[in-house]
Image (tube, helix red, strand yellow):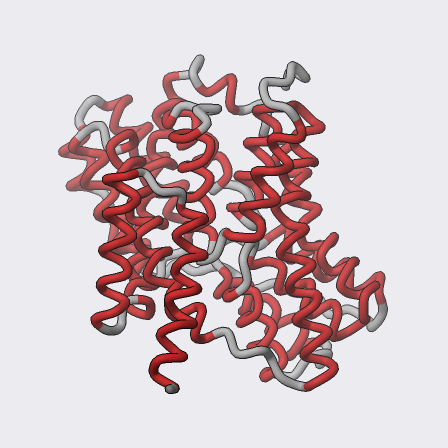
Length: 383
């Protein structure tokens, strides 16, 4: 990776600090906001380059949206950009979660955020839907890729492991292009055999202390693929069942904080670390779970410029991009059922979509407006 700087470090810092404060809704929404900022608004990357990075990112363990931020920083400003973009995206969320953890420890409860989130969630659905539409027009270039996207979305909704889908889609497209018979290959593909496949849980008990706490989160950050719900399974195994450090109620509260605060869902580790070890515990847990992301992106960075020189690698990456798009679609479909629950949320989602598509509004402002609408709606109902 060249150290030639295309974007100033201050520009990277300001962008990812803002996204770290306003990026609600989980990895799919975060990636949609990044695409809006770095492809459509700033034109730092082409849409093709963005989806290539997304395909590579989805192959890596750890928090995907954070790794996309790190990838963009590396692409735009070399190794310094890698650090600046990643830290600036993580830091606001970690600080917010840390404050909520302090409140939780002091008062034994979380602040009420349901009202604000009522308005935020439909906006997020519109943001991700717009990104899916734009990326889909770039990624779905052939009938094979379209059929593959539909099948991968259905399999993701059926519970097939994300990593299995990514590798299977990449291998299928590569093989189809080598054989030159995509239709026949698709008919012969054993899709039903993928349904029972699932991720294996982490293993290995640890002792109490800051160093073991760091190691447990380092391990999770190094091997975890998938969403925040997969993170919940790992944390349950390590912290509830094996060590007994947390109760199930504390674990669910920790995951809830990671879900409704902006930025990476993996800042759940900050909350857990504070519960178990105060400020030092929060620091080592956060460092442990995010450190592998920086290392993996640094190691994977050399792949991107070599993809275009290999037809097999290009075909495999096209398959990865389709599967990545399918995973985003599946997450959006599942979230929509919880986000769009009545007439006001339908109107808010539809209006957000119009403002995004027709007038190109900034998604960060729409998220903030959605929060205000939710608070006002709660006040009117309460009044």
